Length: 171
Image 1 (cartoon, rainbow, N blue to C red):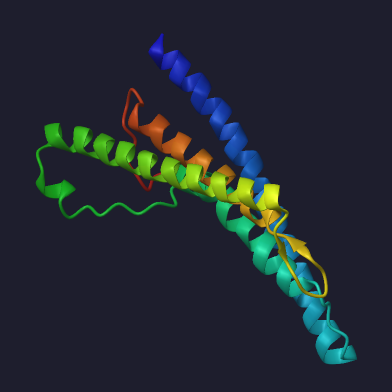
Image 2 (spheres, rainbow, N blue to C red; image 1 turned 90 degrees about the vertical axis):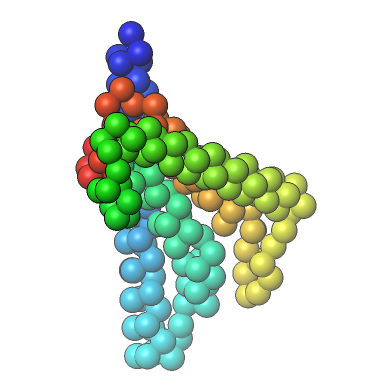
């Protein structure tokens, strides 16, 4: 029962992580195109894209980083320091890794909550980054609780998995 429930949650979360990673990849592609186009316009025609810097810095790069977090962890983009784990008895390693995953999930969940509060504050107050274009701050912050929330769920799911997977390996 638990195993099939865990598998269904894992499949659903993996699907959401894949969609988020695709969105992050699209944001990376748009960033590359905009920066290249801006450089060409700036150097060949002395007419840069005035919006490119703020759009890429405050929106697109935040999307790239935050939306790919959980997918990156799930597909093996995590580092685990093996120095202590290799010296411990096998019976201790599993529970220790699970405790570490739970602690990490709790910390990331706290970051999720705090960034959600910041997003709400920016949204409710209509905060702006003023310049040639007034950029709404909330749309920069929205990606942080989404990405951290997905990572917190993935860490919690891995900590409670029937079989513990090696961190840094693809799921």
